[in-house]
Length: 595
Ligand code: SAT
Ligand code: MN
Image 1 (tube, helix red, strand yellow):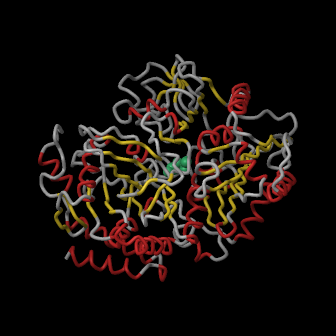
Image 2 (tube, helix red, strand yellow):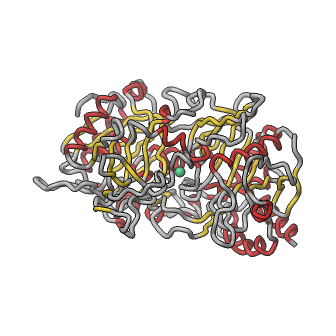
Image 3 (cartoon, protein in one colour):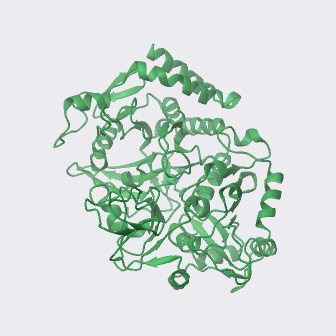
């Protein structure tokens, strides 16, 4: 081991894990630039990474074709009773799960280095932050954690001084026999992958995958699943939300937090450049918000991450110029295609189709190839500090006061562009019944409609019914200082399957209406599902959208909404006696309004 660890719990844990996993060596990370570059040099030498000639200090990785996204079927919330995890989570008894996983962990790091990665979620030393230590045998995880979290010797100093931490154990599950040649992306087969959480003891055990949220354990595992369980106990919120600051032409600031499922445009909204003149949008976070009630009685949000792990396909100077400028240098790309001149490429990056590429599987690709050159869940990892619109307050430990919550998802039909909740309880109902078509961010079928309450279905570390109750309780505590709640759908299509709304920078028009609602500058019309903008109140100036398309986009079809009810009934019924009474009332009232 390259350094001594003074924190007793940590040194004991390192010893215990080393005895179980049997790595060749142990390396404690300090988070320095030198460490990052020397790890990258090794990854280049081993053939795991490709240096991109066209992008300074940027690298391309190709994963195993079986290890390309989060594995929800293999993700577990292991609590003392099944009921505590609830029907939206996979559950195995903790003793049984630990036995199974110990069997897998035994000798799993043979032939490899065990990295000890001390990291902070949130600014180092801030009272709102949490310290984690990830033990991993993946150097790819180390370099990504360097960007996505705050890995630093300062964290180790806090640990040395006795600070507690959340242990996050990770192995790719691919030991090497003496002399065995390594592969480019070692991992375990799907059936032996486990992404396990023990919320009652703040513990994470991940095995078999090297990709994204399965392996970068600060993100979904600590930042959402474990943090949501802690937040419930302590009376705050850990949410799957972007955070942005919008400033109107008079200089008034609004802070917005929005929950959409994975690969539904959180990064695009967080980095939006408004098409409306005089409006400014600044990015605070693109995936996770931790929110606490401040001394002023308002809800204050921080982004606990320090980088973006964004979906590459579809990102372009048209759709998200700010992201394109964020990823000019110092970036880790995963599963993108490689151009002949040494740059990355993905579907939707620009109009020109290169004559030749190396695809994400490492094969030659030409426009005649019938496959995607980049995997649809290809990602970029880039530091938040590189974002040209990063807000000056993005690391403020006080957080920013939230004015507006937005829920939503990807719905080709039924759901209008925007509606507002009648009340906090109704807003919680909108979050609780949110539904979206599945995307390639998870292994499995794409385009299947599913209920994804608060975009937290895969990330809530406890019973979803109790989570709904927690939101209701937070609303009671916030009273008239509670943020206003809205629901959006940027993805509604016409009969020919064409998107009705242009999206991206034009989403600022919808945000402007929300701000005007907050300031009571505009009214709204009642519909069975919520409040809709009055004719003429959505600022469409300079936008080429026909009145017919606009009408379709905003339409609330009672028959279509009635057809949603059986699925909402089933969703609520699955929560049994944990479903809060006031949500039952909300559903009953919706049924009445639909007639
Ligand atoms: O969980 S990941 O970090 O791989 C991405 C996502 O699903 O949001
Ligand atoms: Mn996410």
